[in-house]
Every structure is written in C-alpha cells, then in structure tokens.
Length: 519
Ligand SMILES: Cc1cc2nc3c(=O)[nH]c(=O)nc-3n(C[C@H](O)[C@H](O)[C@H](O)COP(=O)(O)OP(=O)(O)OC[C@H]3O[C@@H](n4cnc5c(N)ncnc54)[C@H](O)[C@@H]3O)c2cc1C
Ligand SMILES: *[C@@H]1O[C@H](CO)[C@@H](O)[C@H](O)[C@H]1NC(C)=O
Ligand SMILES: *[C@@H]1O[C@H](CO)[C@@H](O)[C@H](O)[C@H]1NC(C)=O
Ligand SMILES: *[C@@H]1O[C@H](CO)[C@@H](O)[C@H](O)[C@H]1NC(C)=O
Ligand SMILES: *[C@@H]1O[C@H](CO)[C@@H](O)[C@H](O)[C@H]1NC(C)=O
Ligand SMILES: *[C@@H]1O[C@H](CO)[C@@H](O)[C@H](O)[C@H]1NC(C)=O
Ligand SMILES: *[C@@H]1O[C@H](CO)[C@@H](O)[C@H](O)[C@H]1NC(C)=O
Ligand SMILES: CC(=O)N[C@H]1CO[C@H](CO)[C@@H](O)[C@@H]1O
Image 1 (tube, rainbow, N blue to C red):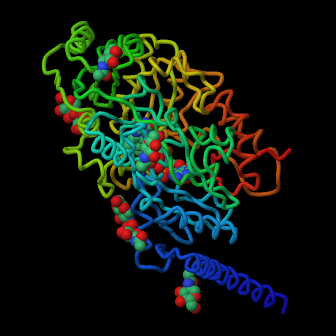
Image 2 (cartoon, rainbow, N blue to C red; image 1 turned 45 degrees about the horizontal axis):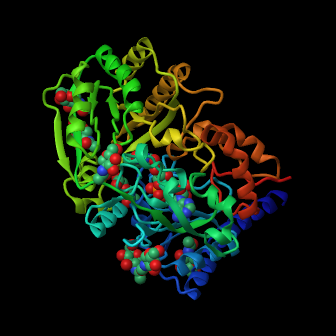
Image 3 (tube, rainbow, N blue to C red; image 1 turned 30 degrees about the horizontal axis):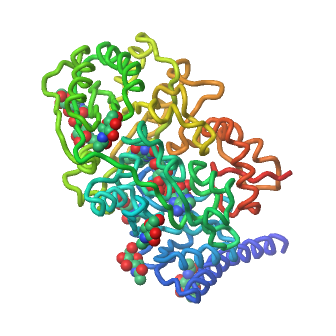
C-alpha cells in the first residue's frame, strides 16, 4: 500500500513536470503573441533546431545532453525586444541574449542549470545607421562586426572605420560588452572605448540611455562582459578616420621551435613599441609556422623601412613578404581570410564553426628565449593547438585602467590567446586536447602576469571559476572575486556596485556574470 502511494506520487510529480514545461511554453507563447512578437520558435516548432543551431559557433555546445531553451525568440524591433524581456521576467524564465553566438563557453545559449531559459537571438536587430556629420553610428547590438565594418566603409567611402576585433561573424552585442581588441586598438583603443551612448533594456523592462542609466551602469556595460546588466538594444559608436590606403604585410614560415622563439623574442620588444599606426601580430601553430603577421600604416615609405627593419634583422628573411596596399576595409577582409567585402555581411558562413577551448594571459615582462623555446617545443606536441599574440602598447598604454572595466593597459606588452580546436566529434579525444591546454597554460604561468593571473573577459574561460546560483543568498560577489579580479583587477568592486544598482534581483545572469551585492 505504501509502496503504491510512493509510486503514485512519483507519477504525479512526473506528470506535473511535463505539465509545467507545457504551461510555461503556453504562457510564454501567449505573452509574446499578445505583445505582437511573432518571430519565435518553441521546442516543438519545426524551425526550432535550425534556429537554435544557427549561431552556435562553438560546436562543443552542439550536444543533446545540454539543456535546451524553452524557446528561441527573434525580436525585430526595440519594442519587441523589450516585450520579450518583460515576458521572460514575468514568467521567471532566465534570459540568454545572443548576438553573434561566439561566446567561448556557449554562455549565450546554454543554461546554468537553475531555471528554464529562453534565448533572445538578436540577429534580426542588425541595422547600422552611420552619421557622416559627426562621424558616429547607431548600431543595433545584433549586427556583426563584419556588418559594422561593411556599412561604415560603404557609407563613408572608406574614410571611416571602427576599432574592433578581427572575426566578422562575432556580434557587436557580445564583443563590445567585453571590450573588443583589434587592428586599430593601438591607435584608438578598444571598441568599448569608442562607445558614446547605448540603449539598455533593464530587468524592470525600462528602456534606458546613457543619462537615464547613470554613469556607473554606462561604465559597466562598456567592457564588464555581456549578459550581466540587461539587454543592450543598440550602441552609439564613435567612428575613426583611416587613410585611403593602408599597407599590409603577411608572411608564413615553417621553422623549428628555436628560430621561432628567436623571432618571437625579438617581436615582444619591437611590436609594443612601434608607432600607434602599426599592428604586428603573430600566430604560431603546432606545425611551427609563423603566419599572418600583419601591419598597417598610412605611409608605405615609412612602412617599408619599419617592415624591413624588423624582417631583415630576423630569421624570417625578406623573400616572399607580401606587401600590399589596400583600403582599410579590404585589409579586414583579407586578414579574415575572406574574398570580398560583401563576405563581411555573410552570417550563414561556417567561418569559425569549430570545436574549441581557449584561455588567455597577458605579458608585462618579455619572456626569456629559453622560456619561449620551451613553449614552442610544448606547442609542437599538439597539432590541434595554436597561440595568438596580440601586441599592446600605443594608445592602450596611455588610457587609464579605470576608464572602462577592461583594465589591461599600461605596461602590458601583449596578450596571449591559447586555442585548441578540432573539427570532428572525437569520442573523448577532447579531454586529451583540453588536458594538453591546461598543462601548457600551467607551464606558461611562470612567464605571464600573476598575482593575480590576468585574463580577457571576451576570451571567457569557466576554468577560472563559476558562480553557483542555486540555493539561498550568500556572499556570491565575494566568491566571484576569484575570477572577477583576473578579468577586471581593481575595477571589480565598481562592477558589483553597478550590478546591484541596475539588476538587484539578478535576472540577467550566467555562470560568470557579476553577482549583485547581498549586504
Ligand atoms: C573566431 C573568433 C575571433 C575573435 N576575435 C576577437 C578579436 O579580434 N578581438 C576581441 O576582442 N575578441 C575576439 N573574439 C572574442 C569575441 O569578442 C567574444 O567571444 C564575444 O563575446 C562574442 O560576442 P558575440 O556577440 O558573437 O557572442 P554571444 O555568444 O552572442 O555573446 C557573448 C556574451 O555577451 C552576451 N550578449 C550578447 N549580446 C548581448 C546584448 N545585446 N546585450 C547584453 N549582453 C549580450 C551573451 O549573453 C554572452 O554572455 C573572437 C572570437 C572568435 C570566436
Ligand atoms: C503541450 O500540450 C499541447 C496540447 O495538449 C501539445 O500539442 C504539445 O505537444 C505539448 N507540448 C509539449 C512541449 O509537451
Ligand atoms: C523572422 O526571422 C527570420 C529568420 O531570421 C527572418 O528571415 C524573418 O524576416 C523574420 N520575420 C519577421 C517578421 O521579423
Ligand atoms: C548544427 O550545426 C552543426 C555545424 O554547423 C552541424 O554539424 C549539426 O548537425 C547541426 N545540428 C542540428 C541539430 O541542426
Ligand atoms: C547627425 O549628427 C548631427 C550632428 O550631431 C545631428 O545634428 C543630426 O541630427 C544627425 N543626423 C541624424 C540623421 O541623426
Ligand atoms: C599619417 O600618420 C601620421 C603620423 O602618425 C599622422 O600625423 C597623419 O595624420 C596620418 N595621416 C592620415 C591621413 O591618417
Ligand atoms: C606550415 O607551413 C608549411 C610550409 O609553408 C605548409 O605546407 C603548411 O600547410 C603550414 N601549416 C599550417 C598549419 O599553416
Ligand atoms: C587571416 C589570415 O590571413 N589567415 C590566413 C593565415 O594563414 C593561413 C595559412 O597560410 C591562411 O589559410 C589564412 O587564410
């Protein structure tokens, strides 16, 4: 008898769970429809899989074992975005905002396990409105960086550009929220340094601009990381002048570890000290190629002098150095490995759709030759790995560390991104790749910034720590300091204050969002 009762209660609770998912779906559907939001897919819709999958850029998160959203909603206007946010909040559904879907940890479309969730996919909010009178642009946050580059170049006849990252399918929603470092950052700073205004929809459903959100929140959204503050509907960007022609140079060499180390040893002294108009990065892959080195400037004479200075005096040699002049936007096309300008606006490309895991570091003291040789010997052991060295210095050195939440300024010579990437489902080999990455990262620890170890929030890395949102209130802001200070150094406390002001109920959250203060 007792057993029977237990069984009965088991059935009842299962039936309730199914019922409640269905009630949730039904309530969300009717809330959206009555707010005139019609472009969404629930789990039983035929378009659901395609839509959810479309912007999953890291294939590690295409996995049937990973919880899926109740719905994918695609707002097409500011008002629809606001309505979708309000529906989710009223129904106590977690929100995942997805712009380009490039989050290294899938934070824009996976759950933290505490709640059913909805993906608000912003790909239809991708309008870019350029104002040539004051060299600004209003950009809806679902526009990709490629769409921004294309529109700005097109409307300004190539005289203006925007300083952001290199991957054209990355979203401006996620990238600007986390900083945004790229080819023009040694001259003009980060994407986030060039945000003049923004429209934010907060957890109370209010539509706020710079003056109504207040300076602390306006500060926080420019580099404090996506998904913590509310939904950014649009950014107002300061566009920057670029010359008609820039000069680019790329070379690719296959060499053993030692000469690569010699080249990089020299590079770490030279590249951060070059004039602001130069950007000279290095990618090193396991097959020990030095590839895709690039520079840009507005005077080919001066450029030749610099390029030859660096190349003559190195093991790279001067042969087969591809020096070309082109417009700035063409250089962005070329460095992205694309063919034509119109490719910049193609979001259906599989560009960057791989399985991958990344980590990051910053370097303030040049790494000794022996350390670099050791690093490249280590790298050579894992053919699926790559490291990417991005030069700092220039304007990055002159901007105060507290202007925006991104703190890695004066004294940083370069940033390192470690990547292990694979293209096929691998039957467990991923554990081997990721374990290799962890060991390599540990080896590098003695040579990079420490106490604290530093990292770039746009290369988001859950190994640094996660917030457990389940269970009762406790000092989560204190616990999150462990990883928060790696990304934000002394800016962490101000981020907690901004979070507490704008979203005290913590409606916008993920595994590494800034917790509100509970005291
Ligand atoms: C191939 C590749 C190249 C890259 N190159 C660079 C580079 O050169 N420079 C650089 O700085 N970074 C670079 N990145 C990192 C990139 O900037 C980050 O991964 C960025 O966060 C991705 O933004 P997204 O909109 O595409 O991603 P998403 O996954 O859509 O979003 C990332 C985070 O921001 C949140 N978010 C998205 N939209 C909004 C919004 N409208 N309002 C509030 N929160 C939002 C999401 O919820 C999530 O937490 C690169 C990444 C890849 C994969
Ligand atoms: C919810 O209920 C409706 C009507 O009974 C049914 O058609 C639908 O498939 C259910 N959805 C889910 C997700 O169970
Ligand atoms: C709905 O979304 C699809 C896919 O992104 C898009 O092609 C279509 O234009 C959208 N429809 C409306 C009415 O916004
Ligand atoms: C999702 O996309 C990936 C890569 O583009 C593909 O391999 C996979 O089959 C897709 N899955 C679904 C369910 O569409
Ligand atoms: C462009 O900027 C100028 C100067 O700020 C302003 O007067 C004008 O209204 C703007 N144009 C548009 C279309 O917003
Ligand atoms: C070219 O570079 C020089 C030196 O930095 C700078 O003074 C000048 O304004 C630049 N010209 C253009 C057209 O950008
Ligand atoms: C490395 O360089 C060699 C010779 O130029 C080339 O054949 C090889 O494909 C390159 N490998 C990678 C990963 O770029
Ligand atoms: C961005 C870029 O130029 N990528 C190139 C780097 O080098 C590899 C190998 O030579 C090319 O295939 C990429 O197109």
